Image (cartoon, rainbow, N blue to C red; front, side, top):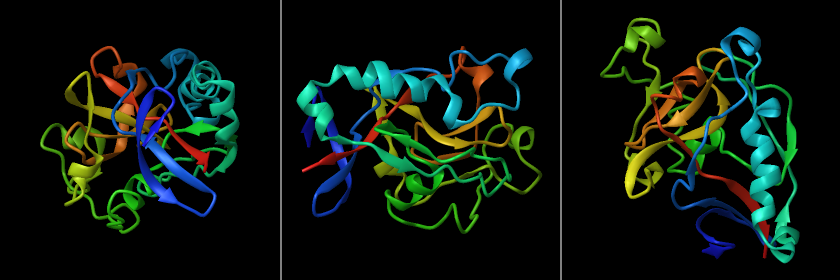
Length: 203
């Protein structure tokens, strides 16, 4: 569906509202642009990250006043990362947000691979991020549905959930597999990771 300046995919439809996510990655942006290893290691959560402030501030204001009235403020649950036990922080109230690990699994095929902890080893440096034979991501027949492009090319996009430690955030790989161990914020100079905003819109 078209809403504002973007094309959106409908993830869930209720009688008076729809949950939508941008069809593709709208921009490359760090999870927390203010993060530094020296000052913030261990404090990276959705509640306090700069990406949340951007989405609910500058990005929200790109919509017209009428469109903003259609965007619902909702309670956003921030569960812990169940594979690594990292806290997701407190629940928040947001108009615009990123999907969680649970939602990335549920809304793209509902395969249950995350909750069922059906892990896969990575083809590169797996032991750097996870214990031996204990892979850090899941991949299934619905990878193609999660795949998104940035400037015409498949790219990785952020989830709001924490990764393997408190200075990482989960993501969806450029091939559609879900990276539960996440990306370290300090790697953003080397890794393009983009934003697919999600929101509930009144209908």
